Length: 261
Image 1 (tube, rainbow, N blue to C red):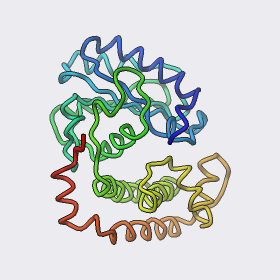
Image 2: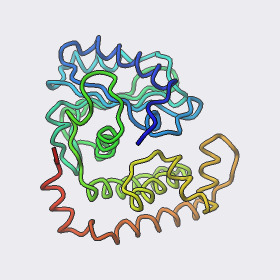
Image 3: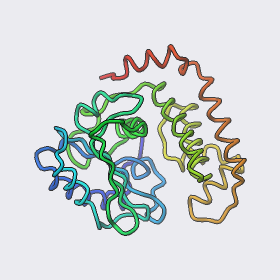
Image 4: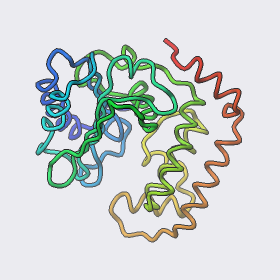
């Protein structure tokens, strides 16, 4: 059981939710705070806010602009805000390969929103883990509890999403991100728990490369050999792929019955 949202993150996120409510009006269904703010390890000097928004109906062009601009220039943690908006139907029955969405908005240094319009299609595979974390631990900033709007995804689907995330992290060029992403997948494989990357890293902290990644996450200078980071990620991925729940038949079956209400 998670301890509840970080107070500093909650204060910031509440203002974000107020602005989004003004932008969406009656089209707003729910807003959930997720990520390190609810899983633990939130640090305003190195973290971001993660918010998932559910709307009743697809967004108009005017609503896309209003959503993106409503959250500009707010008091945010160092890495800003990462926000995704989905309709009720997109959230309730996601395509497990690449869930559809309405808009992604990211606020970083300088305060202006970078946006990706998802309405033309294409989807985003990262949303599987966002939905899974929101369902298990998300804090409602507006609307009902997450179980009312989000599906329960099978372990096989979540595990496959983590394999996909490790693959993306390999190409990011950031060994800290790669190691802690792999650590979270390793912890899920062991316990079937969705935890923060920091908590997951602590579980594998006997390994020097993981200890170094945790130190760097806290802002402490600590060298990481990229080859060691890749080796650790490869070992975790191999362990996940060997899990029999990830056989082709098992994953196909899980996708067919992904929503468990």
